[in-house]
Image (cartoon, rainbow over all chains, first blue to last red; front, side, top):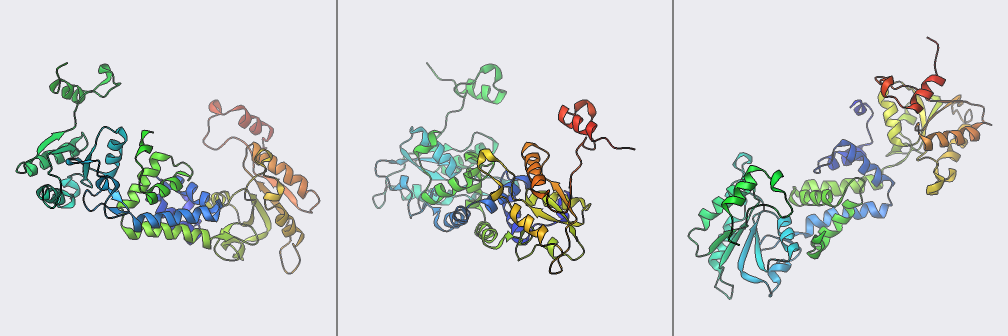
Amino acid sequence: MAKSKTAYSASVQQLLELFGKLPGVGARSAERMVFHLLKADPAEALALSDAIRAVKTQVRHCSVCYNLCEAQLCDICEDPSRDGGIICLVEQPKDLLQIESTGAYRGVYHVLLGHLSPLDGIGPEHLTIEPLLERIAAGGTDGRPVIREIILATNPNMDGDGTALYLQSRLAEANVSITRLARGLPTGAQIEYSNKAILSDAISGRTKM
Amino acid sequence: MAKSKTAYSASVQQLLELFGKLPGVGARSAERMVFHLLKADPAEALALSDAIRAVKTQVRHCSVCYNLCEAQLCDICEDPSRDGGIICLVEQPKDLLQIESTGAYRGVYHVLLGHLSPLDGIGPEHLTIEPLLERIAAGGTDGRPVIREIILATNPNMDGDGTALYLQSRLAEANVSITRLARGLPTGAQIEYSNKAILSDAISGRTKM
């Protein structure tokens, strides 16, 4: 854009660049955000600054399941009413929250913090696979529950399926039952508009009525 | 959304809410931003926090023209090569930058910091109209240049035109020539697709070739 000719002042320019690095924020949106903050009540703008700092300094991963939390353990790992013998394995804390929102699951979780992606240089050592294996091995000792089942809840796409396959091989030796989320037609869909991959899954995974 | 059932940790929730207040940022985008910052290098995230603080504490309005700057006077008001006798009146600092980017203007500016909007409770006292009148009155004293012309460069829409009309009446007694930006067909447009308002302006403002 021709606009670069006349620059904003240094601190405005700096904030524009940093906002522009956030996902989904282009040059125009960054500009709108900066001007919003310039006009905003100082307390509101400084609250945003403080909140970013707080998130970055206070939020950590649960030492057991790697969910986000602000203490040693997350609320789910702390909750004695959850079934510690079933671990649902998800890619991201967001996935965990989405599953929690259904209310259909009462076990605990393990957050991988990503998926395998060799092209991006993300191998097993970048995920929380070792801690998972240790967690399974430690089951039954020191009053920890024995892990009976691992639900592989990685995303139903190429990366997630690849990660699930790898995990299946790594978990083969552990004495746990390995399951994965059901694959099929999403409720509310129309067969007419479903694609081949979904229909193939639905046919091969058909269940008795 | 059903998601509210399971809450994020307090500081994450706080940041989500504050991001959500930025223009154009909905719940989903705020979530993406927060998770981006959680994963980001701490230095990058804290730089954003600091940049917001810096903008809010360092950026101020030029004491003469109300453009944004970090000193007493903005770069344009400081520049001795600019013609101080012509003032281009714009609504926002963004408008000033856009006009600067053309390189077609060598006078100085006055930023109104908004437009009249009685329905939103924004009257003349909320804009920098008094300082403009004082600036014109002070022209010629203490070595300040005499103001010869005021270009009303408010937006070519209802609010901007209303503000320009009001300013015209307020400036009537001052001994300055009052002009406004030309109105007509935008270069590159097609008459076939121009609307009535644009064509009416183009016809009534037709010029000799």
